[in-house]
Image (cartoon, rainbow, N blue to C red; front, side, top):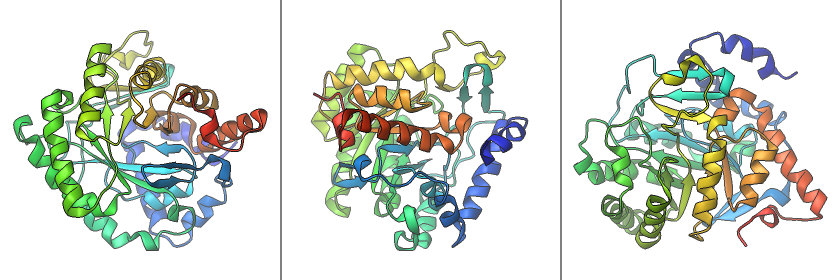
Length: 361
């Protein structure tokens, strides 16, 4: 039994948001230490060169990343990186600091191994994140954190009308651009009114027009688009065509869902985005649909709880993987379980490269 297994019963007795805040504060404290990240590295899986992935001009030490949502303000990257992730995505961050939606706004569905959140992009704003990352400095990141890829997920400020979204994204992207290895445009959260309407062709073209201008002014960075799982096949097809036309570098599939079919937990009627085990099948189906229509790189996220899920996504054509709710339920040991399972599959096949597990072809 590991330390998280011992702590989990106590954390799960707390209000979910309070538990989240306690864990984030502990990780932030560890990140400010010169020693703590190195101690955490001792419990992380050993680096396996066979798991390295080169994508977007970046080298990921392994294909497993932490999705946005845990470290909303970019306070804990060194500690999270030390746990063995190939990438850590921070945010979602908005141009304007905002408190998010009223509490309670985060719910555990233990019977379903799921979460429902209606957080509403609560964060301290892009300028504050940029200042924090500037103080940290990538050259100061120690050990494994020096190799882990840093992604920044950007959303729309709630106070800004959807018609002004492009200018709002411009402000936040400009602030954080110098500090990210890659960026993600989040237009798929269900918790900001009107946000998902930005998944349509015209507003997406306007948003990526802003991205093109920033690439010219600030230097090229990979910019990905995060999709909702609630789009139907026709909507996904239209979105893929638009993404390819406007210069999206990759897709993140998927965000949380509004669906509630088959849930058992008494919290199932709470409003907000559902994540975790109930999303596994739908996220896989979206991945398969996307891979059948595009050669764009795809980051698969949604309901990954172990090595079997990870291998299934790779076989379906995912280039990279992300976890969030599975990490909440399984703890840091999930990293070793997933990466160990991928390594064993490589052994079984006599393969020397994780890309050999891809279902792209």
